[in-house]
Amino acid sequence: MFSKNLPSVEPRVYIVGAGPGDPDLLTVKAQKLLAVADVILFADSLIPAQILDLCRADAEIIRTANKTLEEIVPLMTERVRSHKSVVRLHSGDPSLYSAIHEQMYLLSEANIPFEVIPGISAFQAAAAKLQVELTVPGLVQTIILTRISGRTEVPATEELATLAAHQASLCLYLSARHVEDAQAKLLEHYPAETQVAICFRVGWPDEKIRVVPLKEMADCTHKEQLIRTTLYIISPALSPATGRSRLYHPEHHHLFRSSH
Image 1 (cartoon, rainbow, N blue to C red):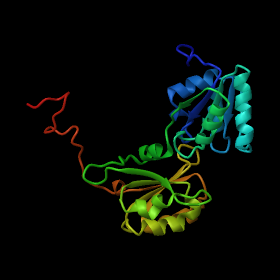
Image 2: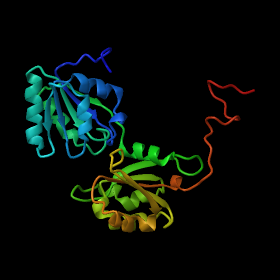
Image 3: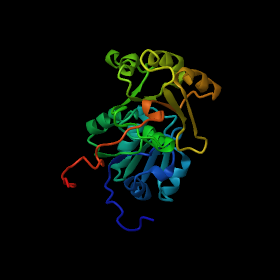
């Protein structure tokens, strides 16, 4: 597919966002890198094996679900120093809950060059499946991406109840194990009938998406037996609403459309 215009791949680490699960949602750049890289490290518990079909037949494949950071970084460092190109595949987009901060720090300390390739996040894929815009004029214009405190503590200024006060489109990651606590904090500010999309393994063959009132968020999660890989979208935009962007309104004039 990519016999032409393949990237010039240097010995370095390419931190690549693999998207939420559907291999078709990989960026073109990610696909091109997978097609030529010497080594692929991927979190096999979070990334479908079908993505490996895009790799070179002779590429070295290293599964990392059972490895620690102290094992992964030396592997990447050794391969790059052996003049090999390394793709480090992360689910979703690397800028969100992907633990790349510490990897980049250690790679920099070791003088190993790296590049980050963005990917589609679960909240974007879920909104597409739901066929909704999360920023509806006159209704909601802010998207908050967050999580509830668990084994990883959230800073006090970012507690869920504080963020819920904005009544924005709130995308809640990594929180299914604490869904009762999350629901209680959200109900402090969102009406009980606010629609919540419960999105399990978006883009995977066993994907589940359920839309329920906020007051039923925890019950639905337990009924569906969802513990991990679940995203919640809490938003006024999930309810039928009227709203129109000014961008394409006939009375809105800008550089590319003058007044008549």
